[in-house]
View (cartoon, rainbow, N blue to C red):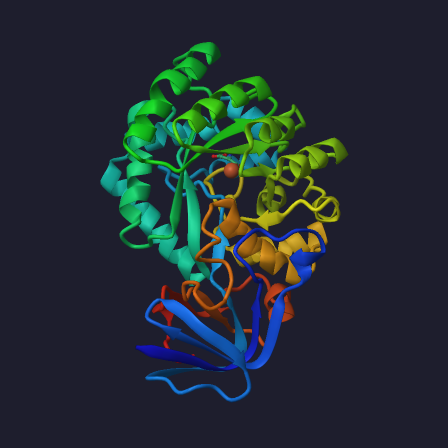
Length: 408
Ligand code: NIG
Ligand code: FE
């Protein structure tokens, strides 16, 4: 069945199957008075002016169309919420102080251990539906609220079950998210390397392995050992680094050949060079900086150094309970000084590359999956500018309208 999206006011898309960087990150394709033809779940062709014949027509009413957004960094499977921390936070307690007092990640760990797999599944599915309604058609989900094998597996099984609803999900094992209260740091790193990683890999529960490498959590040396072990078991390395302080996470990312290094709000010139030399994608998380009232990071320095920049939400119950990627995109423009074109590449093609899905997603091009969003906006600038309300009018996933009206 050939379906034609017609009367597209502006069609904005990055191009290619690999992450873009430097000047190319801003060199997107912008078509006007455009159309896009798909057959089944794939895009066949697109262009400006007179459209081809089709079996079914979707009138986009002169609005903006972009690729479905790709959120390459989320912690979406968790028990409970943490709104009770807000008062402490407003009274001046820092993220690490709340964690040290047994709150923060560890309180979510307690709730996630208690929750049944079915309850976690239902809750995560609802959050994923809400993300889809905000334009996110593919995403990554991390574990990391178990810190014991059974709970980490429970979280990752939830992600596997969600793939029947959305096959374009990437699962990441983040056992190294914090240290559990019941074990010494040394014993926990041994447990991750000797027991947890082999078990997760044997069950095929994750594609990536991640470590929170920062002050007060895992050292660069521990991160390297965990990530190299993961790599031996076929899990591709990722890091949370330089969120609180630079402790060598970017160098570790380079040494282990990480696919991405995420957060990077404190990264300086040497760290940027390490990312460049290692061919690592920088995943920036401006909604986290917003909620933690912290620096946003040197986005422009990364673009100038030819490091591919992606932008994601980091959605989690503690440091940023926000699932709107358009909000993060606006923050990336305002505080990271990305242009609207650069941020579109960051939240689509580069996000897809950071979870190894850019061969089939992240751009609107013949052969790619028909994941697209019709926005209640005239053009890309308006999408960034009219922040704070959901502008996604219709969200199409693999050629199926999953949210909004088919004709918008
Ligand atoms: O990416 N930085 C570490 N982990 C999460 C926060 C997790 C939490 O607070 O529950 C993050 O921001
Ligand atoms: Fe995170």
